[in-house]
Length: 451
Image 1: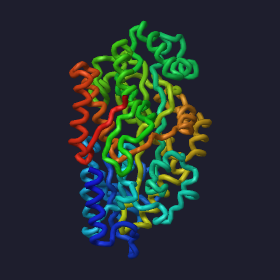
Image 2 (image 1 turned 180 degrees about the vertical axis):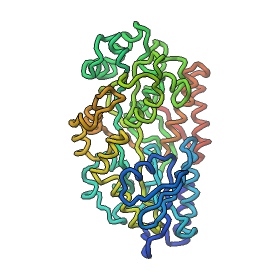
Image 3 (image 1 turned 90 degrees about the vertical axis):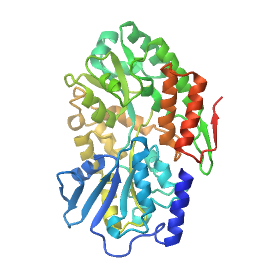
């Protein structure tokens, strides 16, 4: 699929000579088209971008003080719908009127590599906008800069987010099982995989599950793969040993009773309910957005019932990258928005205070970690989660990425979820993954499994 997209994009660029490597030389346009999958970026633009005048009641148009309109084109991320709609727009980029051009688009860590690939010619180098990553973005976490760069190390996107993950746990369950809900003491109980496995036995003895679902641990394994799912320029997909370790360990934990067998994966009603007060689940592995957008929305008890501590290993989950699109007729506006939303430390600290995001300045997050007065969380009982997020972020080593990550991550969990739920045997799960991945990415010619 990536190869097909690249061929089509390159053909369009060669035919018109106006797409890759171009910066609009005329007057700025009056419409800025921004493609995303939800309203998260819009809400942050509204919160900190000083040029915002108003947003329409339906959230589709934001008007700036100079009269320029931001048009928000939102499509769901599920099942690749957002990428499909974005790709269709990118293929038309050289042929549409200025007011129809994509000016900014967002990508997630799971598929950012597809759009930052230099050969794709769709995400502009930041230097073409007049943004110098070495100086303007010097305070960003280095792994986020690497994630947003092409194969030659040229940065083609930026982000306001850094998404280190923690272990979020129920204070009442900790008190019942450990006799304390202190984050430092609980942290010792979950400090590595061997320790947390022993702790899982303690929790089980008292009638509790360590985690809700086998899917809850996946990101920690996935962050540890040695090779990307598909290497640049290749059509062979390699399933890393860490992924197969997740399958093996998940089966062991399910059989031992450390997961709730009735919860099948994530992002479903059973998973949501497992975050409620009637649940027997001790903890979840979540980044800041997971606490704010997911856990807090599903919790039906009093504030202060949850706390955070260190995870059994450092990991990152998520991240929304902002890209300037080749062919934009609004390069100055685009530059201004990217700098305001991803490089201005005070703006980012404001987002952290108001939206609970762990944002992307190293010095800013170090300040937040030591500022309990301004960065404590009522949902976490007055705890300052940045104290725990900051050291995890500083130690994250991002896994090697590929343009196929979203599909691989989704489909490996779906097909082996059937195995873990005893719907199919192990070999059938493997065969089902091979079928599903080739349906999603027809250019894949071979799947190699770790021994």
